[in-house]
Image (cartoon, rainbow over all chains, first blue to last red; front, side):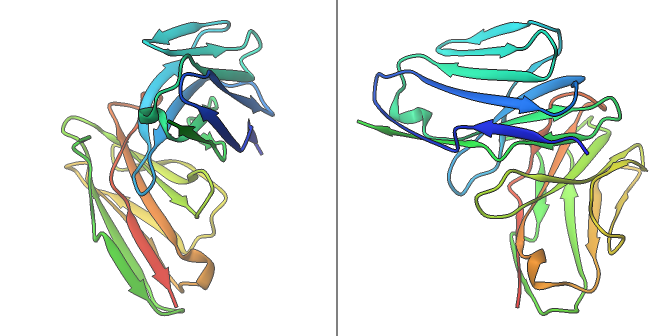
Length: 110
Length: 112
């Protein structure tokens, strides 16, 4: 079955440093979604990428979808303490099934 | 908030018992997906309902079953509970299949 891997599992940064998490799927995806989950909370939708090579930005966050639609990345510029949480990618196949990665947990030291 | 509600918030059951979890979708959303999230892991897809029909299922045994009602609210039923079923159960509604998902706060199930 489809597998989605995320690296790194954990990332500790100093406030102001950049952060990147990578997502790789074993199969070609229909689309990919990114979510953020704060400790004790539920996943919150950030963005969806559909097109091959697509790049989208949300303020300090930049999302990319690979040309082969099998990988994606999320980059945060100049992290802030409010960025802490676990970032998940979720790859959707043509049958509509979403497979989540195990997430990258970001901690930011002020 | 997402407008997706789940009940109950917490639940403690004994191994072998049955449980029903409920989810109320965001207004206008006809698609509901259920996920199981163990501690430190990503949500695992259980199944999805679209307009009252099951529309995709993950690698979960038949003792995990569901329903979607005409108002698009949904239930997750788990029979013969096992200790490993202890987890956070999340439902997510979306405007249609393939759209972004809006998660509810989850039900924390503990099986003893």
